[in-house]
Image 1 (cartoon, rainbow, N blue to C red):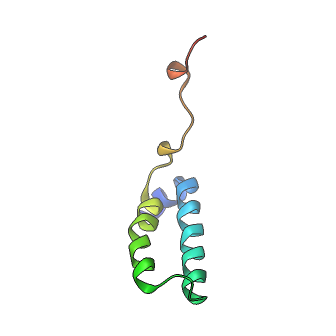
Image 2 (cartoon, rainbow, N blue to C red):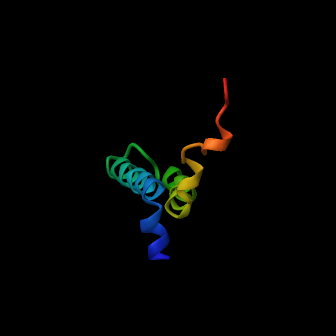
Image 3 (spheres, rainbow, N blue to C red):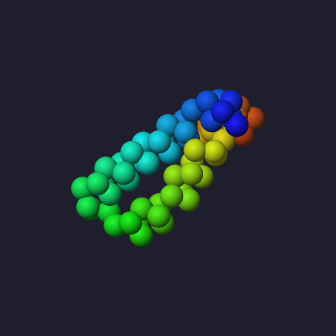
Length: 65
């Protein structure tokens, strides 16, 4: 599991940044506890999502003009 998180560093980094921002907003009382809990599935999903979701298009899928 650790290898998968490190291998897909883009989505892991995005998830960690969102988690950090959500914790700071929760500390500053800008975000309520319910809103924080509502964001957790998205943040946890990004931690384990493969980078292929945000990857570049392959050569054979590019539009030829």
